[in-house]
Image 1: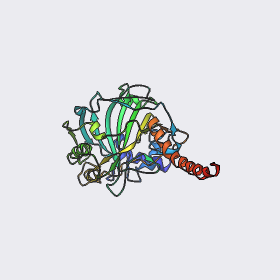
Image 2: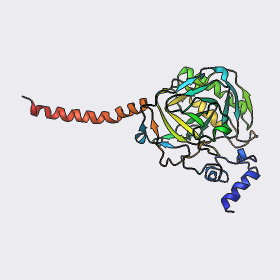
Image 3: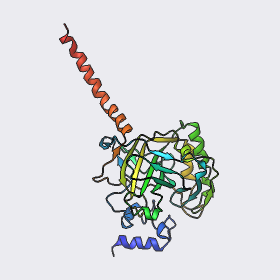
Image 4: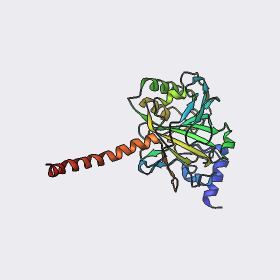
Length: 320
């Protein structure tokens, strides 16, 4: 047995104060070398060829004119957000049935099961999992859906069993009032779940749509990938929205300062809970119709302007 396998066995069998836990669900971590992302290759499908997250290169994305706006049902219902929990790895919000996702490029209707977030270390380090042209945002919101309302355990057996909507979150003083209010209400719950396994019922004061703000649901990237935590099942259709959600800086700071990764309030802070970028390999990233059209206009506008100047320069030569 090589040293990596021995190390993985030990992380399952023993508890590490650094943030690794005795259960198989908790035998991995983000920050410590003995259980961090470099060791995940021995867990589940984490050494596969369709892994997430990735760095999306805009110029390499393939335009798909059939990718129109996503269709969201029930996202404005504030009663559907049930409970918020500190899992020791993230903040997870469970959802009641009734939130549905459909649209171009999706093979079925998907039902939202939960949402969670990834973040860095406040203002000092961004923590989104995906990147665009190498840019990492403050945080990332993942809304997890399953195909035809399957359980997660069954959905991971289907290569298209899970659909995740991903939104970049960027700290900004320009957050719009309604979105700002929703995120501040959300963040007020964090001190109630400061320790691992603590949870609290939500009071219906905000909806998922409130948190998503005025995002343009026609502008997104789509690719086939995996869950970003062990066992990294390669069963996810990813929809990555191009426009970040602006939130107040104090909200970003709360995620990095008010949560512990252990059952002790004095335990390590829950920070930098994002997986490093994975190789894209031979996969293609598709750009939605609205997004790619806008990008094309932006890219070619300078060329058109130069051509116009050239023509204008030579016109006097041919004038009568």
